[in-house]
Image (tube, rainbow, N blue to C red; front, side, top):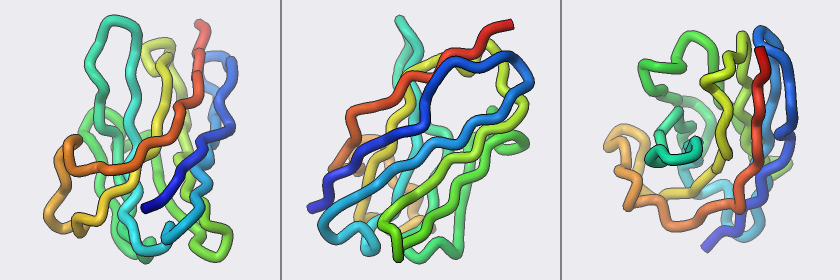
Length: 124
């Protein structure tokens, strides 16, 4: 099991960048880390994921040109770099851990541990 805590959210202007962090305890380095977001009244949306070793990533088409995920297992931390932010990026952002390998692209239900979320608000 792994426990996750997100940080780095805040209020920014359109066009700004923001980096979220996801710090884990337990066996963090053995888990794939995924990033999701949920806007009011909408379903939780997958954004991207990084493999347990940080060598591989994949992204949702909607954000692949603006968002990048990475990790530093020595710090038990994963990151989501978000560039060129838009008002429609406003949401609560979550990281989550899965023991499914990245090549199999785990479904949302296959993520077994979730952080508490961090709010990102983008104003025009």
